[in-house]
Length: 128
Figure (tube, rainbow, N blue to C red):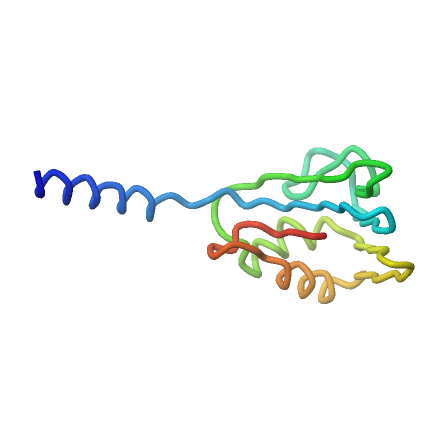
């Protein structure tokens, strides 16, 4: 019985460590005075990376309260953020409490997106 339990726990540990989570970007807002706009460089569906038919992607209580997109497996390292997100985004504009914050350069976008990686495996970027 103990040997079976040890084998089951070993196999479970192996399978869990071998599974990479799916990279996800989540954009959401719950407050009336908050709005997030993501301006894309292109809305053509032939490229790899962030995609939406609408440009800008607009997230607010009055429009869509959330936007999410899944990518390949793995964590959001600097190279994947640059390739799948920064290269596709022209700018991110956030309106909160009557103030506006804009990220318009590749370096600013990269830093902002890296700072918003969540979970222990850093497979989710969450913008609120």
